[in-house]
Image (tube, rainbow, N blue to C red; front, side, top):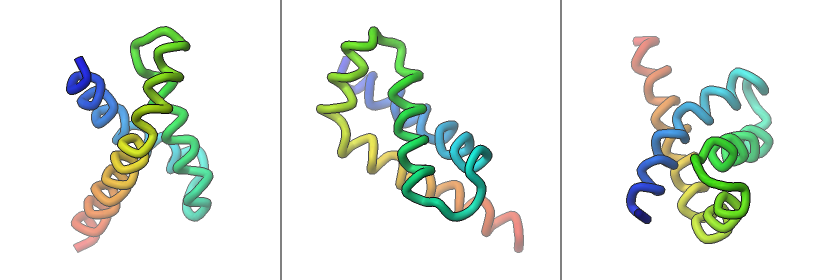
Length: 82
């Protein structure tokens, strides 16, 4: 189950980064990161209590996955421009 949760978080992270970028535009990195993390936690298919527990225990993992999604999205933008 733990691996399944991590997989769901990874899937949500890409959408979260897109949503944050769309809503806040360029710059504001920390605000976008907070928005992306909130999006991930909000969209996990669990009760609010379980979501809160997951966000506490996996906060470092969620942070890392958001950073990886940002890097991935930035690499796509660079590739399209060439």
